[in-house]
Amino acid sequence: MRRGDIRTALLAVLTEAPGHGYDVIKNLEEKSGGAWKPSPGSVYPTLQLLEDEGLVRSTERDAKRVYEITDDGRAEAARRIEEAGGTPWDLVEQANAGSGDLHRSMGQLLGAAKQLGMVGTPAQLEQASEILNDARKQLYALLAS
Image (cartoon, rainbow, N blue to C red):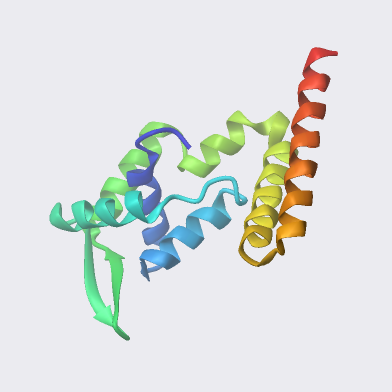
């Protein structure tokens, strides 16, 4: 995603359904096919800013802060999406039309590596590093051919 797309992305996701910060992050990750997982450090301050501007509102539900888009937020989301020519994930998909499979594969690889990093044994982590280093070398060799 391009820098600054987080604002549009949050508004767009919240037009579909309210959610707490983690829900929003997961929805954005799913919409990008796993290629983009915004950090809590970019999502929560932006949600607070959007709330300060009256574009979203939050309520406490089950000990979680749930964000919901306002009418002004819907109008802002529609304006931003129209000006950009689509949602941030649509634009990335359009820009990467020829490399969609590569991006999808990278997202899946990242997910597998993250999971291995959380639960893998030291031997598995060492082997995973070797696999990734070999893959990197093969990709550079492909570019050089």
